[in-house]
Image (cartoon, rainbow, N blue to C red; front, side, top):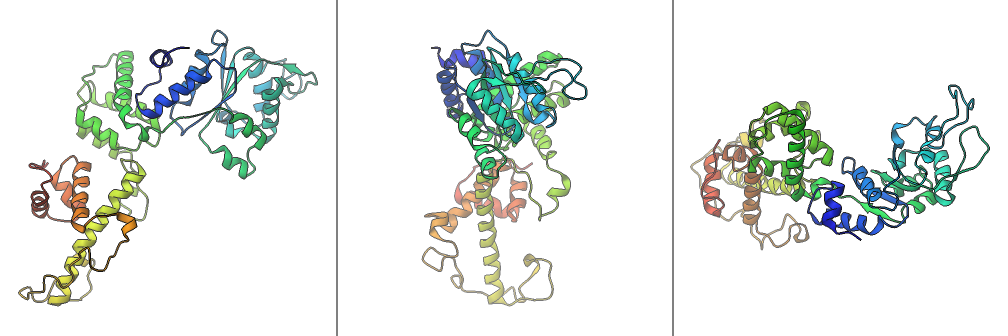
Length: 404
């Protein structure tokens, strides 16, 4: 047995989050046992790193580990690549050739993107897993191999089974032991360690000066969802280091480069989805709060219009409608939204919160999103900077707010 620190140091797996610690513990348990493993997780989470760690700490560590990307091999030649072929078995087969399973004999074979393997090939993979037997393409002779299989996928194999795209028997054979890698957005506390590792490796290899990332720059990177996970983060860090040429990386640099990820045409079209710099569930909550806040503003405007009268000439937005008589007074409680009045939103949707609480929360979240930039926050919430400042003072949110 070996401890987690040694395992993490020698395997190169980065992170101290709960999700990664669970992965390390699983690797520690299954590595010495000669059993097939299925590694699952989104693209870019580091499934190959986990597979290499399992091999490194297994009984087969002194033998070869063969890495095969099933999705990168054309369907017509995948069986020849995996199991080999006999001379003359097809056009271009000028000599006998060993397949990956023969090369990995007594070692480990890592089948990445196993969900991309054709159904006909899956039958032969199951046979190898069950008995270690296979045949080269164009040959009737049965051969044996002693190999440990580690498979990986970024797809739901259970869904592929339901759709008839993956064999159920192979699925159950593979899922005996599963290692689930969490996406980067669920382990944001590990981003600091990733940034330092990637930055130091890249700058040393390319002889580039490195002055570090400012804390607010790292905080901004933690707010981004990283749909490409660790792979995307690595490429992003390298890109920023090249563009800044040894300068210290600030929040402005990160904001500029993250905004460049979103296509201009998408950001200008409200009908299209856009890439947000946070996890989808958090972004949805922020959107709801912001819409509730804007609804409150619209309600107050309608209240004034109904009491004071309005010019109902065609207008492009509600904000363009002006009362006819600005001097008229209106009852303060004619349309006031209070907890005991008619509820526009179900309690089970927002919990025990007052409208004032929703307004305060919307301002807090928007300020945080824009790094306490008052101008951007006010524009996003659809209010003036003066109104925003008054609200900040009223709720005691921030004694001072950046105005850049």
